[in-house]
Amino acid sequence: MDELIHRLRQSQKTSSNLTGESDSLFKDAADAIEKLKGQLLFGNQIIHNMVVANQSAYIAHAAGKTDNAMDWIENGLEGPGHLPDNPDKKTAQQWYDDNVVEYFDTRTQ
Image 1 (cartoon, rainbow, N blue to C red):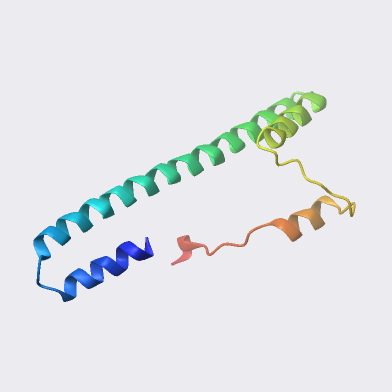
Image 2 (spheres, helix red, strand yellow):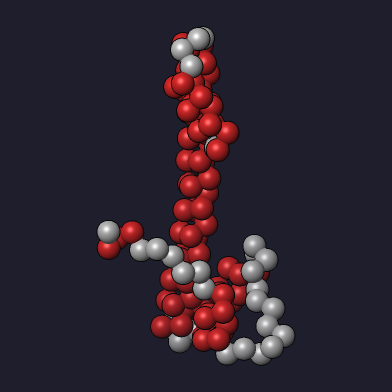
């Protein structure tokens, strides 16, 4: 992506062969955008599936099926290889605090 931005800036500075270079740059930009859209969709699908699995666990737990609820959680983590390795025997809160990703909340801007 950085290379594409660099090429776009260079083409703005040069008038020779501008039409051909611009056409090429716009095609590359369109291809990069399509790739990013695919990656974004894939990430959204992962998040969606994890939320649905957590909702299913909640529903099972609310119905009194606590073993079944834990199965939903375990399967959701084990499938993609995300079962936690916790050799230090951290509490759930310690694990969360040590591993959560802080993000910039754009909703407040």
